[in-house]
Length: 130
Image 1 (spheres, helix red, strand yellow):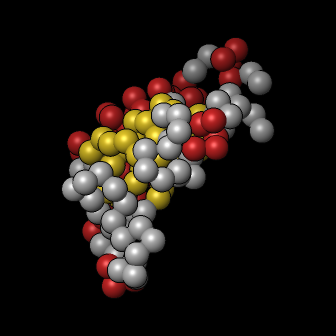
Image 2 (cartoon, one colour):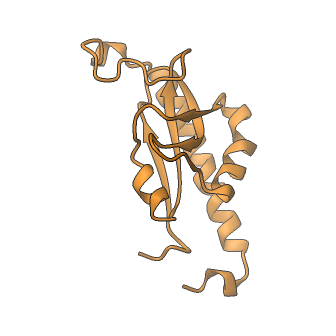
């Protein structure tokens, strides 16, 4: 896997709770989101209605890439207590999905990936060599 040119954008628990860009995550060791990815996310978050948060209660799909020093970041739906709503609960069912949240994160993700690609394409070739 080309570490220099590979990015992991993990979307987790979208459709329940308010979407948050996780700045750090991990149960035992808090790992920070990739700085470049976080910079782009912060630039777009207000426009798309995303907040910042952290997740220490449960591991996410980005935790292993972050542990392996890969470029990764998670967008996750969180409730007012900063936890994933309905996680491992009987209430975790299709009737609880908030379609607005899915559309919101879809628009954010599209803009985020486009900005990240534009920034990456503008980087000098020497920094893209792997």
